[in-house]
Image 1 (cartoon, helix red, strand yellow):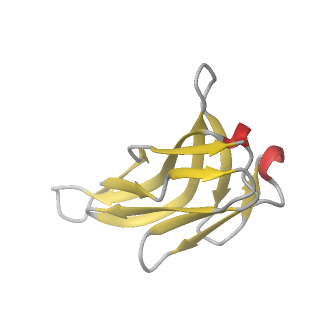
Image 2: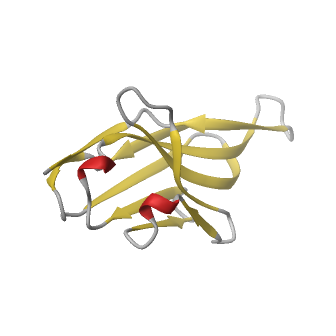
Amino acid sequence: VQLQAFGGGLVQAGGSLRLSCAASGEIFSINDMGWYRQAPGKQRELVAAVTSGGSTNYADSVKGRFTISRDNAKDTVYLQMNNLKPEDTAVYYCNAGVRYRTIIAGFTKRNNFWGQGTLVTVSS
């Protein structure tokens, strides 16, 4: 299973970006999907998460500005980021809890997977 993230870049304060992250491989099902970020010198933190049923959770710092969504048919999670601030500058990572098929027919395993990270830079 692989997660591939897209959409980072450089944007001015007040601007918008949309991140996407697609899961691929021998996927049986995906539970929670989410976005984390890590700024220089700081710990990785949860930005937003969405369950398979569509329930969402946001960090207080992004509530009202960011929206997480997912397309279950495409195994993809999105993060729409509006009114970006310089403090949103970070490497953004997607994460997913995936149940996947193993080489043994009929058997599955579950694990947490991370995307490769995409850099978001917000200039003031």
